[in-house]
Image (cartoon, rainbow, N blue to C red; front, side):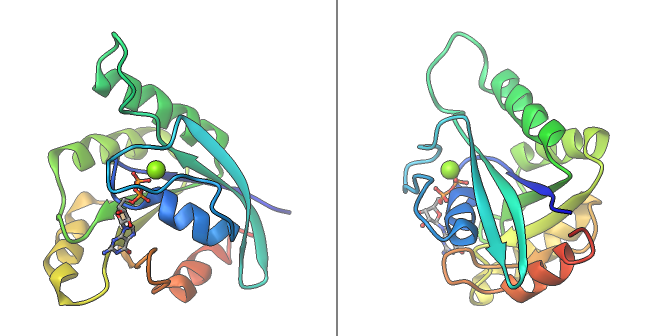
Length: 163
Ligand code: GDP
Ligand code: MG
């Protein structure tokens, strides 16, 4: 049996970078400008010998009349409802922000299973942020670097029991 993983979190934490790494193709747009990917994107992921569906969430920066908060909430809820497990990503270099707290709250209320990932964790600049992530109440953070491919075996170990 396969499963669906949704990568959620505020813009610019590295969701699309991880999505592309897992899918092995540049299906999602990665940019230094936050939130260049639109809406939800689905791909077939492979990690070690497990295969699963992965969803990238984005599309939060397009100008609409609706508030960013409202759109963010709706999009995240849609992704959460499609997923068997959510990977909630923070930027360990930035630490936990107020927006991260909003996402964490949505996930605590709505998601059946949540994995917490502290991304951009290469090097010691991320140490403080990784520690802060424990305070989100979503379990032990996986220390990863989507860009450099670090922490992928820990991610594999966390997903293995679900597959
Ligand atoms: P998204 O908005 O959450 O989808 O974030 P993106 O995947 O578009 O990445 C936003 C920025 O963070 C880009 O400049 C990426 O190159 C950068 N980034 C992603 N992963 C890492 C990482 O592991 N380490 C560092 N230092 N930068 C990263
Ligand atoms: Mg993106």
